[in-house]
Amino acid sequence: MDAAEQIQKGNRLALARWLTQIENDLPQGQVLLDRLFSHSGHSAIIGITGPSGSGKSTLVNRLALDLANTEDENPISIAVLAVDPSSPFSGGALLGDRVRMRDLMEHPEIFIRSLATRGVLGGLARAANEMVLALEIAGFEIILVETVGAGQSEVDIARLAHSTLVVESPGLGDDVQAAKAGIMEIADIIVVNKADKSGADATARSLQAMLQINLELEPPRNSNQCWKVPVLKTSALNSEGIQFLKQTIHQHQDWLRASGEWQNRNQVRMKALFERLLHEKLYRKWHDNLPKFQKDQLLAAIQSQKISPYQAIRQILPD
Image (tube, rainbow, N blue to C red; front, side):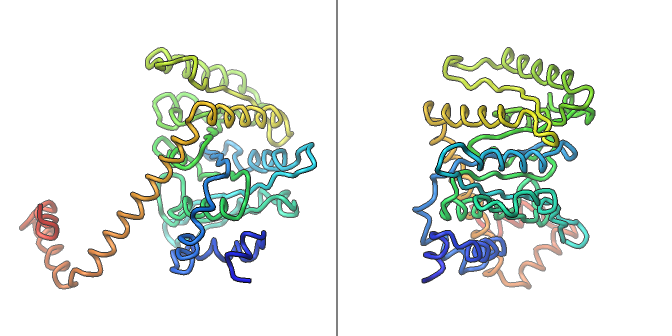
């Protein structure tokens, strides 16, 4: 039995090896992804983002358990892709999400994979999109993608996920900051976690007011078909509000399919992946084909201000 058959039959060791190949940009990982690409596109991808300290990992832990433990006879398979920041000095990553999600380790329907950003900005790792494709091919029905602690510009998750959860918590000061940040604009569901702390109600009201202001400034063309972003309160540590969050996620998934937005978001995701791979391929081709001495000469000319960077690019790639 080859690797493709093992992965599609649920062999997690084979899947883990494949994910490592993809993360390390190895040819064998790309070949297998190319071969099995048509088997992707059937999973619900849920992104969880928000600032550090909001309790994202604990929330993902509780949510994954709740999604997997259904009352039906047929269990739901869940994959968790947790992105951890890399050190700007050593390049290493703690991968602490594996520690915080230890409750999921023994669950038969849940698979966890951590990966490091390796210096990539935007809240995700470079290979996150391809790794999600691999998890889809492996047959997981729901894929949870947890980003690193996100700021105003770290919104790449919106180009990957069908449903994006933005997690806030009281006392971080991010409710005011979020009003002028892109991160609020990508939210399908806003979660005020750590709702057992004082100030949770005020944070929820503040976020709700900001959403209302945004609606008044930019009203939707058809309000009857528009998803109204809810603000929910949870306490992941105490398992409070998780069931209602799960129901809201299912409601959003139903709305995505009924409105046609599911297909639109799949198209955005594939476009983002294609453009990134194309940029990387073109740069690699240029880098490999241009002689080193010519690159050094151009760089020296730019550094000595004899030519501008624009002129150097035009010499390499004429109009």
